[in-house]
Image (cartoon, rainbow, N blue to C red):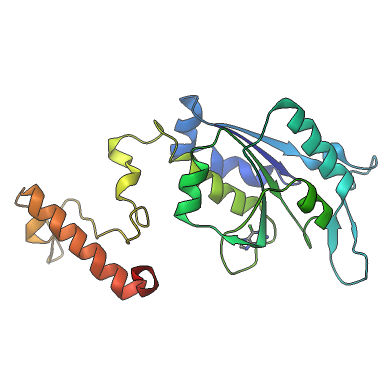
Amino acid sequence: MHIDIITVLPELLESPLNHSIMKRAKEKGLLHIHVHQLRDYAINKYGQVDDTQYGGGAGMVMMCEPLARCIEKLKDERTYDEIIYLTPDGVNFHQRIANMLSMKQNLLLICGHYKGIDQRIRDKYVTLEISIGDYVLSGGELAAAILVDSIGRLIPGVLNDETSALTDSHQDGLLAPPVYTRPANFEGMEVPEILLNGNFKLIEEWRHEQSVLRTQERRPDLME
Ligand code: 6GU
């Protein structure tokens, strides 16, 4: 998979996408991420990419021309399955969307700042608008990092058995069950007996039961 990201703050995307599973995905050649500095497409030598909004009001808006030039250049190089704008007024991100996007070849992500990007760029280019939750971030970069991480780990071959996505919370619509490792007794707190006796069928049943209990208790909304 190839992911291009347009941003004015490439530094914000560096660390999150260069460790652990994302690092492995890149090293295996399964994920290519290219971060593009929007200021390289600025309207003047001062690197201007934003301006005050028509109609008045606080906050700057990211201008059409730099974004259009950057997007057009990238579109010349590849055909995108989705051009995604990260924005608090997008659709709520969900494991379902991560699964869907993990099957695509080329994605373009646009990170907004300030009051966001000019509506005309959204109308002309953007095919999907995603929010990562009902709260406000300073910009789309951290949201983009979350999106890429959640998608990247689902690309076939990225995870091995040990890190399998199949047993993650949300993958089957339920929260994950509790997990334990050594020691069997920690300060008097015992690991549930059933996990120690090696009966895999019973263990699977117990885990499913725990998942259902946990989901009913913490996220009853997911049970409907
Ligand atoms: Cl995608 N961007 C910003 N700036 N804030 C958000 C968000 C995105 N999702 C939730 N809050």
